[in-house]
Image 1 (cartoon, one colour):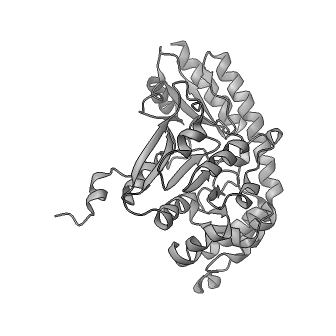
Image 2 (image 1 turned 30 degrees about the vertical axis):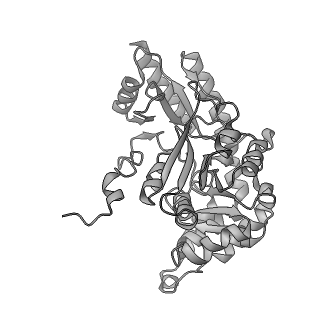
Image 3 (image 1 turned 135 degrees about the vertical axis):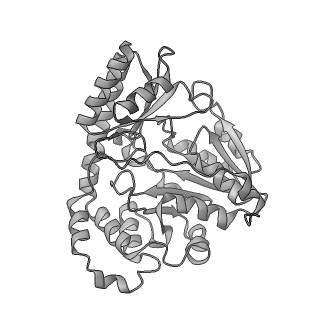
Length: 358
């Protein structure tokens, strides 16, 4: 006998990327920052006393909200801290979607999106990317004309790394009648030359919710701390009605604040990753591997049919190097490679070169 709701019984659940326990693995499969969090984060962690944990934390993480608001030049009421970006995605559906409402996404994309739709009893509309994994023409019209309650768009895109301009988001937010969530988990790695900044759009579009995370850019994937940015009227029902009480704990709040207070350090890692991304892409191309232009901390690469992507993935794994291979249409001939440290990237290229020779 099962006690699950019927729609929960039908779904398979989210399958996270492999998290090996062995320390001799080169881990290029889950898009973590290869550099440690800032010295200030380490110092803050070392100074936390166990006695401080007997009291509840700030319910709304007010110190963090004030810091984030200052950085992004918005009001603190426009910030909602969450237990990782995934909680914000879940809260968005919990807050704004009725059962049988529709969620619109592009595909391929983050595999958690359709699972959240199923959990909440929502239907799903998937707008496929073109065969070459570029966005279809008139995408704002395609998404804007859908009768969806919520649209989630990841930008820069995963798994391709492509960046849509701010003008696209502006147009889509204006055309779309529901809540538009732009998942900007990888935005810290965007080339500053592009001058990408979507945050001012929240002043023009009350339906726009931006997702940010400390997991990637701030090297805190193990902390689980993210936040949303939006019009205060959009943020208020999440903050005061649907989020869990004390949804971010004392330790995570302290370390998140330390991360923002040492943002210059984090930015220096972003510069290193951008440089490594360019070099890694060039080296892959020299091996005859096609890559997609990326504004993230990963590269999508098409492996030649001989030997094939799945074979390369398995051989790399045998060499203690993890990358991501997706058993999905239009992705089976590709692998996604997280940009690692210089030494990790060097070992990866050396192993791949050997594999491709045979």
